[in-house]
Length: 235
Ligand SMILES: C[S@@+](CC[C@H](N)C(=O)[O-])C[C@H]1O[C@@H](n2cnc3c(N)ncnc32)[C@H](O)[C@@H]1O
Image (tube, rainbow, N blue to C red):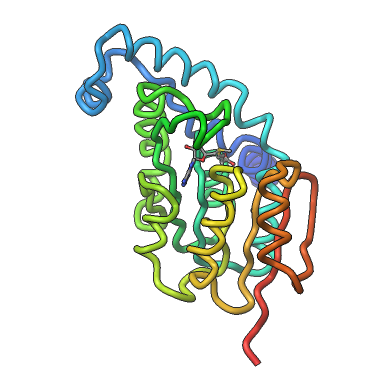
């Protein structure tokens, strides 16, 4: 009975609160954070307050979305992948925590772009991005070699990954047409034949246009806001 209840409790904890185990409320007295961000106390305080407040609702709101990719990875036994656009790290964390993925590249520049380039409410000011990067690095650190957080644009990161190295790619960075197209162009060859290219935000016009254009002749699958294709296998 005791064993059964322990198993049930473990199952419940793993399946309901993977993210919460890793929440680190950031502190203004964190010396490492102060040194790394080099912000005035006032700016650091504002950024920490913002990031801590977002953490409260970020993950539960997006949980249903995280399951789709996690289930796909499990179903097809995918081992190596990359996520373009990491933000608070919820999707990367869910993958690393809930699947047997052996290597995950998590890519995000954590950089404030001009609003012409990146017209999105997630285009935070640079103080917030610096603090957010620190938070996500700390969250992914426990996964050791399985996780590699790359603070750079997707195009730069693509240069570090070998052709055919990945079983899956998840595109969730800048949703403007030109950038989605660039993401697909720079990463298509990194995914092996038979591997999966997945993305978020089908509701965004730029995403739909780039995906439809590039993947003519492919079946484009959809679930909620997500889309994916499976690369053709070699004959
Ligand atoms: C929608 S959020 C990502 C959410 C995350 N995938 C999740 O599910 O939790 C978009 C992120 O893309 C990042 N981003 C913007 N331009 C980028 C680029 N060129 N390459 C990689 N990431 C980019 C932003 O900094 C932002 O954090």
